[in-house]
Image (cartoon, rainbow, N blue to C red; front, top):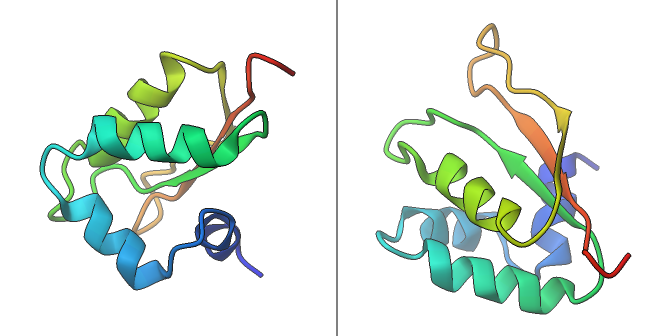
Amino acid sequence: MDAQRVVHRAVGKTEQHAAALRREAGSVPRRHDEVVARAGPGTIWYVTGPGYPNHHGACEAISARLAETRPRTERVVPNEDYFEKPGLQQFVSPAQ
């Protein structure tokens, strides 16, 4: 199973619903709070696609917000040579 499906399953969202949530303007603080609450003391795995059409800055904003409260480690760095530039970030709970 690919990492994106695992992440969506982990937060209980379908891929279509997750895409709709990412498109909501001004939703970064609310989504951050929701994800952190659902993760509790667990690790958050965040799949990114920086520069994706119609979502300019969304991945970066969400990642920056998560990094304010948890240490961020880039496990897969987005690569400009690939169409959607996928990346994978890990946010470990400060309690761990």
